[in-house]
Image (cartoon, rainbow, N blue to C red; front, side):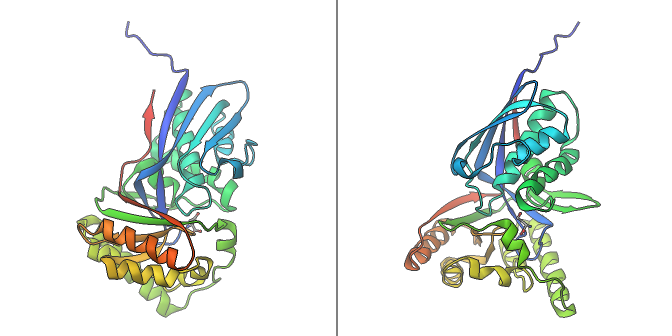
Length: 300
Ligand code: HSE
């Protein structure tokens, strides 16, 4: 008889993500190789949550208010959940989504539920709504599946893209709820045509690992301009990154992270120019020179 290992605890590393990528509001996302959250789960009679690490003081531990708790409820999988935050909350790097995605993958394994990663995306998206007010899968999809993801209600497309990425996180806090409330309620036809063109260019660039096309496709005249004033120094940092060798720059998710696509070999220059430009505006920041990476990793 084969030996079946009884799973009593599971650990998952769930990566940070960048959603929107300018032209793909609420649809596009990429997984980043770093930073990440580490989530540990053990079976229990009822769900309890402990949060450690970066920004943990600001994260609710009540299971009804925490994205991981909502996921545990959705999966009917009570557990003692410990989240070690490597991703700062309210950063635009998919912090709450990583906790939701990682918990969904971990509890699925802990309880042997055998849901696919695609199915877990929609469970994790419900968890995300606890943090942002509305369910959207553009962060949880790449955190679970890796690469570049196109998440629509009809399904998720994943492209195994390989590109260098620079993200620069200023010491500014942006609430996703607020950043969503200020969005325009309608889009004119001209902007719609531009957005379709940019989103298609970006997608083609991802299939070809082409930083020029991806950078060009980040342009967006609908969502991004309404949010730039939430980030002190946005225009200067944008210009500094372009001057240092970026092919395009935009807001990461709902901000305040700024995302730049560097030309080949230019990550260091772009990262350093962005940090210096924020500093000239009196804002401290931290840049990550990273790349598009894999989805959440499971350790049994
Ligand atoms: N697509 C989302 C937004 C990402 O920009 O509001 C943040 O949850």
